Image (cartoon, rainbow, N blue to C red; front, top):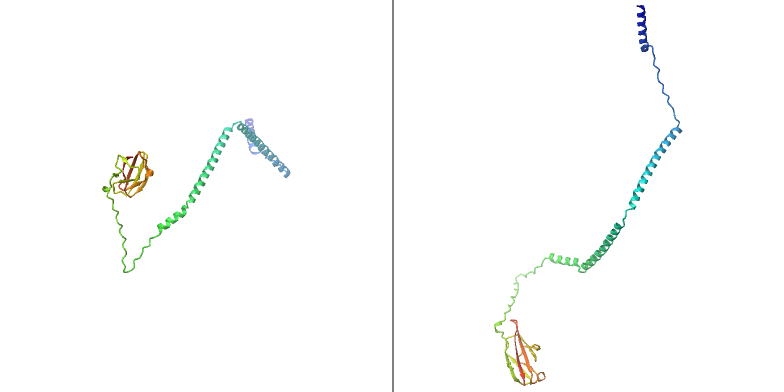
Length: 246
């Protein structure tokens, strides 16, 4: 019995001692203090590392740009350059031609003095007509009525009729001939004469009847043709005849 009691007491002590009598050691931390020179050296090392990485990035970017430019350099741009040159030449020539055309048009318009003419027209339009005052007690003079023009009586204008020589006379003397025709109430008479009916010559425009031709203009034993045109506002009327000299 005593043995069991002693064993139980020992077991209790073994369980209580760790809880009450055992102590835990406190961990200690060691702090290292750096000098200013060490801090500066560490920062310089970190900056060099950053610069190294940036240099590598720049080198990689330069290599990529060189590769891309090299690839573009193999593209044939001569057709595009040629087209651009043609377009530039066309634009230049068209611009020069248009500028020359506009210069000529402007000079032409300036020669008309359009602004001066427009100003004169505007002044005339804006000007009010000045009424002429009538003196007191006077009567204005009426404007005379124009005399109407009497239309000619066209029924009295007739076609010329030969009096001498008669038409078809075969024995007309080749001396001075007095040509005579009827009065047609015309304004004047045109006289034609010749030895060919298609090519008679205009001799005179006269208001007198008869018409004389001298002997020097008449040949013997020759056919002659003559024509008279009665000229009037009612319209011209003509007749032609022929004769033969002795």
